[in-house]
Amino acid sequence: MFNKKKQPSIKSLIAEGSQIEGNIRFADGLRIDGAVVGIVSARSEVASMLVISETASVTGEVHADHIIINGAVTGPIHARVMLELQPKARIQGDVHYTALEMHQGAIISGQLRPMIEGEEKPTLKLAANNA
Picture 1 (tube, rainbow, N blue to C red):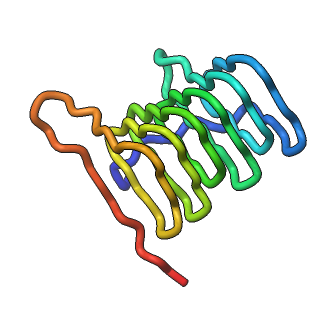
Picture 2 (picture 1 turned 90 degrees about the vertical axis):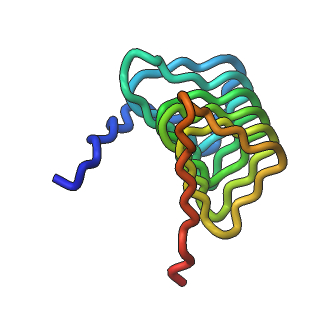
């Protein structure tokens, strides 16, 4: 209706207070509210969404189609379709993206590296402060 693809549903949760050490591979959607030390990677065969909430921390590489971050990530991020950085996002590492939406207050300590197919320029959208 509005030319937007249906987002995958969140089917898995790493709850606040949980800590996982090791690599995670998921399909569809994953929400992280706890701590993860290891690679967080979505299967590339199906559309994927990863939400890293305000209470979450990830130390390691992150790979998914659509990534929403409002917590802390230490390591490189690879967003194949879209990366949304919410106001409390704290990233230490390089960010690879096709499209990027960054809210005021988000911090990146690393390089922004667009994933360009051919000569097409990536989409960059600065979110307006609605407060």
